Length: 168
Image (cartoon, rainbow, N blue to C red; front, side, top):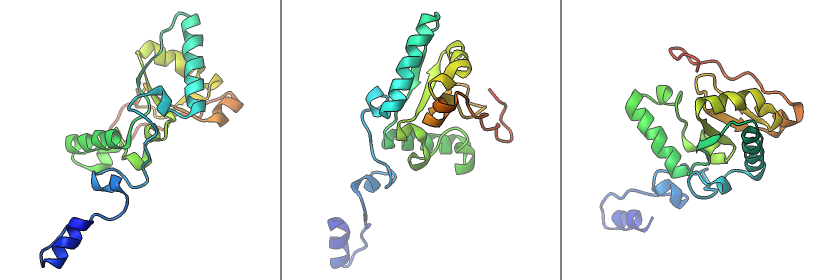
């Protein structure tokens, strides 16, 4: 802000950086970091408890659940989104595979990417007990937590694949 003001006072053109400091480094203004990247502590407490209970129950059945990506910082999510925009050439196409930080449930601490595929299959079959459900048909690895799903004991149908994408 001072640089922009100095530029204006000296007759130059300054770049005004208004709002929260996070806006200055490319992060969304509404984005609030919850912890370290992929730290279980960045998950909401109910999401973390659901995940750990699922891991224990899966292990008791001989299935090893791995967290490949959980909570993401605002900056990390923005970088993932920017990479997808570069890869696909448009915000619309990129949004099929990654969302900006202010729309991502990873940033909110309620989304988990899991693996390997057999473990994701186990979670897809058993996740409603924990409130962990696959939310997008084209991402077999992506699950989200909602306490209503746990209370009801059922998962909603995952969103259908966008045109041009095949369900996973």
